Length: 394
Ligand SMILES: [Zn+2]
Image (cartoon, rainbow, N blue to C red; front, side, top):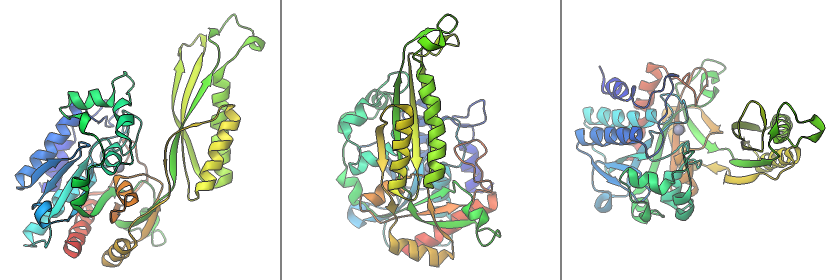
């Protein structure tokens, strides 16, 4: 069994749900198991591990404070609800495997190489994506982060404390940022661009050009709870009707404006089969190549719902470092593509850190689902590409 296969086998059972998908949420016992695994893999390779103020983990081949800044690889280990095995872990497992490959080849980096494990990338528990990298760069206000709650009412501060991380120290971490000369995240592709590349011949690995503008909005729809059997239709104030209009508007507006829009999370009160809801809270995710088009979709959804959407997060178009992108594209002879998915690499790029991404082909393009997949040969190609990138950049 290769080191890659053995790491993959170690991670396979952690946080696996009956659905076959993963529930790896930030600052839970499952998360602690994953973080311990990361520390153990780093330790087995003689890497020192540091934790930054946000709780992100950094494994270094040498001291980045004296010999840095370094080249950092990495990704995240948390998942969306019932997510796939590849989104996040592929980047970290591939980073360790690339380091092994380079050592076997006798490559000696001229500067420290780091492997990062970002905390809470998916925002599955507290609702803010890339919380670890946004806290690190100062893009997420520490007071807001500490007071975010999960579905059980536990705050992020309480969850961090229970996991042994002091939330009082949250805030932009200039010491950790100074150590990053460049960041390179390998990620499973969340689309079919690589499978369809070269007129359908496909490509195993691609290079990211940019992340499309994207955001999350909340719709607070209020009505009046009442009996489903005895209340005349004319007397009802049913917020579910506003939700239905909003969902249909999201679809049609997205089609007209050339974006995507999704209502994937809904909370209904009191949530009874025989009760007209008193309130419906729904979340809209909208993304597209043009910021104005995304904004137009959100406005139309608000009009259809009769309630102004509340913005919970917004990320403008993020271009990756052009020099890194071009260098990697040429080095790997890989297609260059934009993505609609947010990533920690995008947060770092937005903070002015030279950042780049490699994508590994996903044959179906399906992601955030147990069906997410990458073939073993393509995973090997990803490790090789990462190793070649390190040779060129470190
Ligand atoms: Zn991811």
